[in-house]
Amino acid sequence: MLKNPSKRLSVLLTSAIFIGEFIIMIAFERWLPNLSVQLSSLFDATLLILITVPLLQQFLIKPITKLFDQLQQAKDEIRINAQAFETEEGIIITDEHFKIVRVNKAFEKITGFKQHFTLGKSINQFKAKKIDTNIEHDIYLSLLKTGSWSGECNGIKVDGREFPRQMSISEVKNEQDILSGYVYIFSDITARKEHEKKIYQLAYLDPITKLPNREKLFLDIEQSFLVSQQSGEYGALIVLESDNFKVLTNANSYLVGDLFLKKIALRLLKIIPNTYRIYKIHGNEFAILLENIDPDVQTAASNARSIANLIDSSFLSAFSINEYEHRSTVSIGVALFKGHSLSTEDLLKSAEISLHHASFIDGNSTTFFDKTYSEKVAKDARLEHDLHAAIQNKELEFYYQIQVNNDIKPISAEALVRWNHPKLGLISPLEFIPLAEQSFLIIEIGNHLLDIAFQQLLKWGDNDSTKHLTLSVNVTAKQFNKPDFVSTIRELFKKYPIDPTKLTLELTESINVIDLEYVTDKMHHLKDEFHIRLSLDDFGTGYSSLIYLQNMPFDEIKIDQGFIFNIISNKNDASLVQSIIALAKIYNFEVIAEGVETKAQFDYLREIGCDNYQGYLFSKPIPIDHFQNLMTHNLSHSLH
Image 1 (cartoon, rainbow, N blue to C red):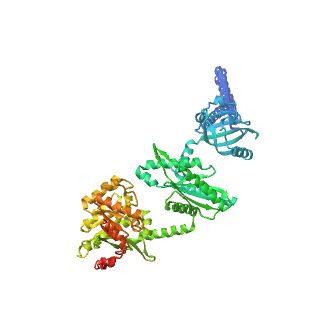
Image 2: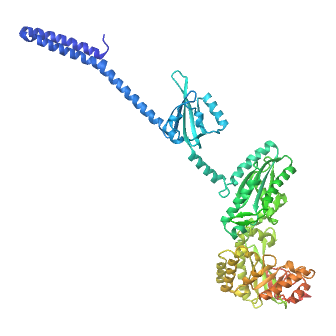
């Protein structure tokens, strides 16, 4: 039985035609005998066509159509493969011996090598000349075990430049599962690497010096702890800063300061051994991390000091900055560590405390971490914290020390701040003023004390026994040099309608360090607008010069108590004080001597022309209520 539908149809049609032809032929022979031969030929031709067409369809047309479909599918697959081969990623195909048999256009575009040049050449000719042996070993093992590898490695371009590649390698096997070659697919990741480099620089490099920054130091300290723990040797963290860096930037500009920092970085890179790492961690502060300097603590300290001495010696030579020779000394702090004996933060804190100590003792020195000094720093930190609340809690108050003339008549008083701490009691300004000056807290304190002084002058103006007094108030350089200082004084005069001639601002010689012209203009402004008095405090201890005295509109010079103390026994001090008084007379300045403690001192000063006096001979600094009582006494009795 025929199962093929086409064959069954052909047999049925053929049978039907034969039967039909037979019946028709009998009929024609009987009724139309003349047409029987023609009809027989017609039916034979029809029969041939009907039999041939299905056979052609089955055995010729369908196979040809199927062949064309297969050819079109193969063409489409070739086109798809060709499109896949011509991607943005470079593709290299090699034989089993790593000889190149084909590359794509992306390979040519990325590397610059043309396909005809690469064919038959070893793949090794197109990798970086100095490739990490660990990467090569990793590629070999991975291909051996898994038949593939993926990772980063450098390639080479036609001009010889190396470039980073993200690459994958896969082996190719034939139908018999025999290795026939390899396919390399890679992309140029130069842009990505540059982006990663920028991110790294932002995160871990100082933008000015390009040295590793504070964050990178923290990471490296952790690693150094592990190194120390494994080796059993000490490490050290050295922190350093140039002395008077702010003077340089204030006198010039921050651009000059930046150039100076770059010069320091270059000098450190030149003198510090490559085994140690250098960092720029803050402002003009640098750090050097030392590893494995010795298992013995004394020897380790000695080795660390040797590095510190190298740094110190390097600062002896001037730094050339824009045709300007800048000289600076350096302060250095050192902290040793072994294993994980300290946390990262504590190590850096210890080194910075040592640096602070070195700076505090006038700089140009090296100090190792000392626990006693650390305790002092901790105490200062607590005081500074409490100082923030002292203003709000009204813990700061004035003590008043009387000032008298040659007739021992009260003419004025100096307001001296004291801190009445709720737990520690009365704290001297020698303890907390330096702390306040390290931050801008001194400005807040200064403005607060000016407000108290204005209030007190307002009260004195309503009292017959005190309305003649002037009040001297100390103003720090930071406070005076603030741009809004004049407006602050103006607002206080609006708030408190006092006689401006009764207010004396005492300024130290350090106010002219930043800009002499700026300071002089501001002093004239204060004099012209408000008619207040200006006093030069601690004369002779700072930067005084004749030019300084000529240009600035002082009303008074205050001789520092250091010159008064030995004025009777020391001829040099006596001569110096006499010269100061004579100079003051030339410029029409009044002279007040502070620190007068004996009648002999008073008599000598009066004899050589001093105008006014202040000191324990007349009264120590006292609270305001005691001062009011003092005003009712005859101070001349203090001389007897």
